[in-house]
Length: 499
Image 1 (cartoon, one colour):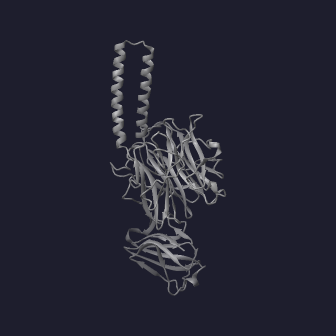
Image 2: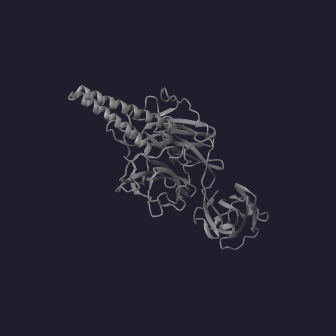
Image 3: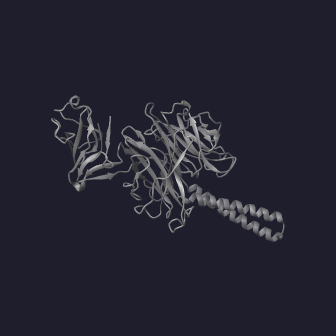
């Protein structure tokens, strides 16, 4: 079974009076599906097994001992989640811990997974599931990216002796590229750039974040290919690129790019597409407020920063997009942790001065009183801020193939002629014709009308598998022929053709 998508002119030989219309998914009313006030963590990957109709989700968090941990949840509907007792770790906080940071007990460890992949082509069953994780080295104290493998997504073994496979930023995303049998990592590259009015409030004001690409054939040895997406004059002046989640979709690659606006410190998600995973088309990258996954309204749990951490999940005739979000802007966490660090340094300075014994008792008492008053005020404010902070997981859904549709321009009937494709016994369209009519006819490769393939009409229907049928052209007779499909769109939306 094949499919024609209409994101560009790849499948189109001729079109007139039609326009491409991008669509955004609808957020779930039950959002947030999972939430807390931990600074780091959140959903990393969600997979759906259509055979057993079970969702599996990996979520990064911190236990009561302040150890960064990776949890694995399951769900029957993708909305309500359970925490099975996997028995991998004897953790007093969570029964479903499947992995821990390699640097436990050390403050400010940034332990992120971003995405787990299931590789059906991997010959070693113990490596059916693979992940890249961002962690801190207990030997050097530096952060880097390591690799791990698992037969079931529950029991993980660090690869490469636990050594990092490359150094880099904590914002990255890995995918299995089945077209060429390799793994792709889309990651942030940090380019040195002088501070500007638009980056003055950023935690890295002299740095510009862009998307780079690394590839590997074995998940251990990675080749750097450099920057692949540019920021140009069509983009907002304060735009930087952050998380970039990529997945294969039919003959295309879908890219969900976290657009980070440094002036306001907020970030949402826009839709890009590609034919090779390297060169990206930004024609539908409608930035705020027209983003693919927009921020919530002011005061909502997802009003500060929002990004997709993984590939879209097909479920029936819908596509599920799980995303991570918080109700504070990007630099809120940096401010919070910097203030806490400052308090710690002030305490260390006070203790050092007290040991010198060079100050008068009265001066020491005054300094001590001022310090305690400052510490109490900062602690109270931080407790209040953290209580109001929300970070969690949300869900948005889209109809199958619903990224972009074709429709007539300004109410006029639009004409679309596809490039030749092999006709099967059945032919379907994914279309919304509730307010109008879709008419379809068949020609041969040369454009000559196919006998029996005169116009058929769909009106008042909406579905992802609406059959086009011609009573005078039985399926068995037309199967195998290369044909062109002529479509007239009157007040309707065409998303795809399935043959």
